[in-house]
Structure formats: structure tokens, C-alpha cells
Image (cartoon, rainbow, N blue to C red):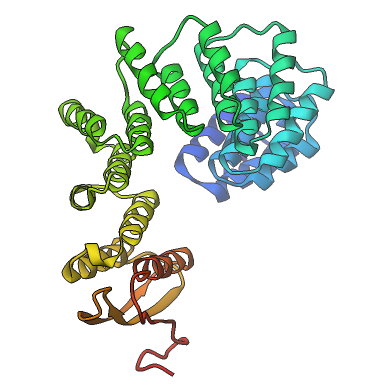
Length: 381
């Protein structure tokens, strides 16, 4: 370790070492360093406090952050902002709210980074009243809006269903970039103002703002909401030229748009050609085929799709989940096939795969899904 006999490193060395442990994912060594910090009394030094919070946040050990909050008084805005972001990133919403309340009780005046985090908290909670209170406090504090803060406020109002509040912030703040434009587009989409989102995009184009992958995703999903296939195809052609189709979020939006417009083969082709697929992608392809029924698919496509789902998670470490799909009967009542699969999957992936099978079999008259007991794979009980 870094201490020798009675020698203890100073605050600058400790903070540097903690940062290196954070980037290296060295949790055990970081905990040892934390013990040295406590023995040396340097835990009250601002650099060290910030480094400790960053270390535990990056290591996803939020209990360590909670311990620092309990035992170390006098946190500054930098530390509070780091704690807030860490709690939000890891889903600790109630703890994040407690931290903000503690800041206020200590008389701390939050900066723009703090309010961006707090508005993100309100958006996640979908708590409009809280968001309005935070907005009011921010205005009273005299904090000036920048493009990121205004985007956070718009996002909060949009996700809380208050589209007028989002529009007010957008039009009252003259300086916009692709982030703020995309945020107001998303706010309109989230509140089902699909046509308004597309009209705003035309204004964005007139301002010579270059769209990013998230802009295209919002626009494609707005086209899906309107079943505007022509508009969606135009966007698709542009995406092919700009290269944004390589982004998963854009691929997902394209699949959604084509499914919603009834173009199943186009959606299937996009799915097959995607280099990277996330859980959202699988959910889209599952729900899309399920919605349109097995009669829209050839039997071979069903088998290939099932193999893709299982194969995508092959080799995942975790609990062994055995699954047998016994007799898949297509909706025409004639084609039948038995599928037997035994894969090592994590618990969540097992549940997900089961959900896939149940969804894809919606059109079957006699679907059978059987989960054998551990060690039993040789037949149905």
C-alpha cells in the first residue's frame, strides 16, 4: 500500500491516487486508500472529499457515497454536484432529493450544474409540482440561463406533460444549439404533438443547425406517431447519406417507424443489418412481429429470429436458465416446428427470452412454453 510506517501522503497525493483507482476499477485498493484518508484526517480536505465521492460513484458503490454524506460536513458545490449526478445515474432518486434538501438547508446556492441535475431528477420522477418549485427557486436566485440549463428545464416540463412550459422556455431563450432544438422536439413528441415536432424541425433547418442522432430518432418516432411513411422514408434517405444509421438509437427509431407504418419486411431487414442491438431493439422487433401476427412471417424467419435472440446472449455469465419451446404452431394451423434450446443466460436474460417466446406466440392456437426443473431436460412432466 502507499503508506510506510508512520508516513502518510498529503491530500494531493491521496486525491490523485483515488482518481487512478477510479479509472482503473480498483475497488479493493480504493477502499484501502479510504482507510488511510480516515486515519490521516484528510477526509475533510475538499480535494480528498471530491476524489472519494468520484471513486465510489465511478465504482457504483453508492453506499460509500452515503457514508461520506453522513460523516463529513461542509461539502462544497463541486462535491454536491458529483453526489447528485452519481445518485441520478444509479437510480437513487430519493437520496438525490435528500441531498438537494440538505444543500438548501445549509444555505448553499446551487450553480447551473446543480440545477441541471435537479431538473433531471424532477423529470425522472415526473413531478411537475417539484419541478415548478425548483424552477421558481432558480429564478429567484438570479441564476442566468445557458443552453444546457434551459434544455434541462424544457426536458423536465416535457416529461412532466407540461408542453406549454417547455415551449415558453424555448422561445424566451434566443440562443439554441442542437441540444436545445432536440430537447424541444422531444418534448413535443413525448406529448404527442408529432406534427408540431416536424414543423419545428423545418425551423431548425432554417437556422442551419445540424441534426444529430437523437434529433433523427425523435423525428422518425414522430413520423411513426403520424404513420407518415413518406416523411419517414425521406428522413431515412438523408440518414443514409449522413451516416447516422450506424447509431443504435436511429436504427431503433427506423424499425419502429417501419413497423408502425406496416412495412414489416423493411423493419426486419433493418434489424438483420444492425451491427449492434440493445434491449430496446429486441423489444421493438418482438412487439412488432407480435402485433402483426405470425401469419405475416415465414416459418424460417421465426426460427432465425429466435436463434438470434438466444445467440445474442450466448456465453453471458450468470445463472443457468433452461428453456424448451415445445411445438410452435403457426397461425395458419398447418406449419409446426419443435425448438429445443438450452443456453447459459443470466436471470434477467432468461426472463427476457421467455417474454420473447410468449409474445411471438400470440398468434398460435396451442403454444407451449415449458421451463424444466434444474437437471431435467429430457422430457415434459
